[in-house]
Image (tube, rainbow, N blue to C red):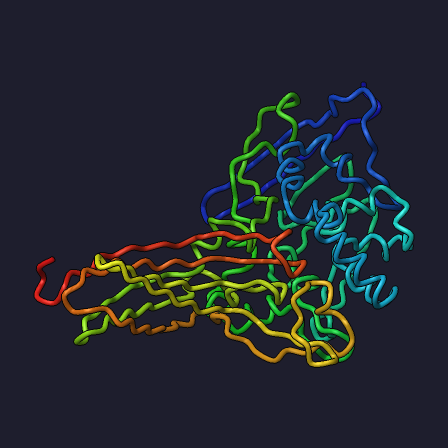
Length: 390
């Protein structure tokens, strides 16, 4: 008998269907990492048994929350400018274990795992009546999750209704500064949406199930529906594509061409874009003619902030500074339909070539060096001259 063994049996019922996964999990390593009974267990240790889930997590923004050089640069900039108080605001979500284990010096390797397995699976409550919401953790041998009747000999397990609710995400995806400036409002946007009323949670969109091995298949081949721990978000092409619908209409009006674009927040249970205020969605309408004329107009959907001196904020590290305030919000709210109209001086005898594109932008450093730019919707149309003949 090996010194390290675990039996993981999960029972999940979905309507009349019952999924039973019974597995014997013996870490294939000669030196398996133990589950820490009265402290933090590293995600590497979890990965000894839960390899598929661990690989998903490693590809997530959660796993990279303290590794991302763009964040690290912004965090250092904020700390140098504002001091430790602002630094703690950043680490509260990017490295929750810094506070939970009193590792303010970030000396422990596990702190640099960011939002690791123990952070999520040790969460016991979120009090959203406080701003920001107060998260309560019970770090130790008990791992909490959404599966009822789960059993493990590697560690204790507990069914957690919280992990089936959007509230589990609110602790980090909702943030108001001590001065009352709402910087991140993703959860409260969801609360007022039809998604919330229909029972569609954050997990429904961002942690859909996929077929995977609950534990290492070298031990026993059991595949089951596992929540996607990659948790794709605002930088995901697929998520962006599902969020907004586009309908294009064109009309001749004498010596002008009118372009109407109807935008519908069809799939996001929050505003588009959401998260950090610096994120933007651009609507770009371009028109060219067979006579060589060209036109272009843009509309932007974002939140606008100013600092204490009234100057526009363009760097992510400065939204949390004292005196920062929101001065505008043009984002597309949950379930909202937005109609945008454009008029171009196109001769009635000219053929017009219309292109409509939706583009996502996030420039956390305020410039092009770290910018994410994704074109996620594009539609083209040829408009014949009045009368229908080119």
